[in-house]
Image 1: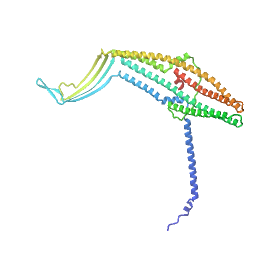
Image 2: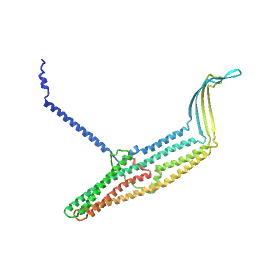
Image 3: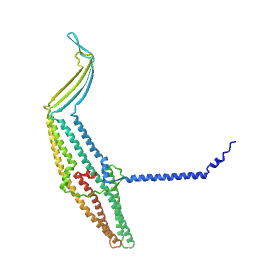
Image 4: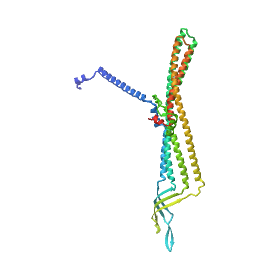
Length: 461
């Protein structure tokens, strides 16, 4: 017979009720922990989503870092720097190592005074090294090096100009999103006003104060407001997609409205002077004029003779060895080359360089005239937007007060439905014009900075 278990074991064994209670407690703790973990993750996710808010300055910095067009211009600078290295290589002597091995089909001998003389060995080998340097007597290579350095400067100015243009594009897309968002808010407010107007028309129709046509007119205006809201919402989505594409960010974002500080506007001649000093495209064209002048000098350098210097070490061996074999030799050499006739190539090259120089001068003069017009246009546009903004603000106040008064009068039967519609259309037009003027004024400030060449200084502080 098996021994019976000890009493202490039986007493320690948990009952079914005790097991269910203990298991249920653990499940409750697990559920509470899981719920807490979910809330933590949700709060983190909400924080990350809320962090995707950008100001205009943030978008400027991101666009500079991620824009493909900016990176293309940066690669142009890299290419120009590589061109400088290539031009510098022409001033450094070339070192060349050489070797050769030849096997003949047979060994040949001749005779001289009855003695055999080796004519063709069975194999030969040569090896050695040489240093070569050639240059034009007028320093044409130095001119090419100077052109390469000027090309680097011009590429950097072009890069700065590309950044200016791109920043203005980003600003335009940014204010388009804000304008579309404001348009959606205006559409919502208009929808709310027309809903109240429709409800008031229903109330007055029930008591017999208005006819059925008043309610139908109100319903029609409300339907139009609903369609306008759909159009405004889709316009906002489109402008956000465009901004995301321009800057290179995720399409799910919010914007923090950035207001450009009003500053004292300089005089128009002062703005002209600033543009002449700061515009990157003008600096690029000035550098192009210098490059064109140097290219004329470079083309004329082809008329000068070239000097070639060389130093050579050579070794040789053969089998069988002849008595006249020179196993090692060292020598230096110099050569002067003066081309006399090349079919008119050099004169055509000089004429082409002079024409390009003339083109660069004309392009610079034309751009200076265009810059003056651009500055004047941006200056007058800023003044216009500033004046419009002031008067539209007054118009908006009047239109809002007028609508509130007419809406109250309509509720008490003192105004007709046409009065309400006219007042609402006036308010709607004033709100839209005001929103457009606000963002057009902000963009006009940046456009003036772009035309005077100080956009990067003011936008990327």
